[in-house]
Image 1 (cartoon, rainbow, N blue to C red):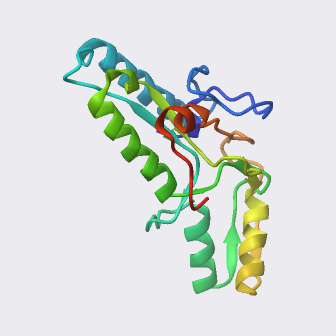
Image 2 (cartoon, helix red, strand yellow; image 1 turned 90 degrees about the horizontal axis):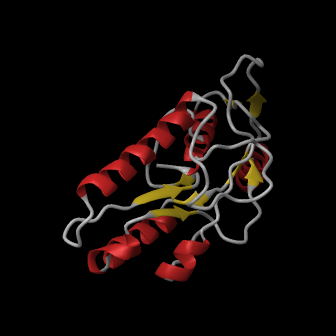
Length: 186
């Protein structure tokens, strides 16, 4: 699923660990929590033997890999540059755990290899950037503007936008310690 599966009070007091309470104050986050609950119910009901194993993975915000969907920050920035130079963002102060898509994918492969051998790995796993300060959406946009040396007009929609958690951070200590995973590109 994603980092949004956790019940997030928005305080940002600490990064989420895999055992934290699931939930969501917006439909998207609630749907991610529901997917986790369904996966856990299947794991406990149907995949309890060593021949069948199920794990879930929760990644932070990924960039790269050809995701050109709407409301994705980097594709939206590129589209803005290619079109009229105007970028609309929902929440400039949102803090996200940005990472290159190949980093969590590497973690997924390590997990699959270990899961194949041992049912102990049939649990939830977080994959997010390590020891990097999580940056706001606006900071990321400013970095792109500086890198490309080309200005954008940034528009902020009205305050009638759907709720989004202001801060999302993941603790990936479990993946680091048990899978020997470390991000290389993030």
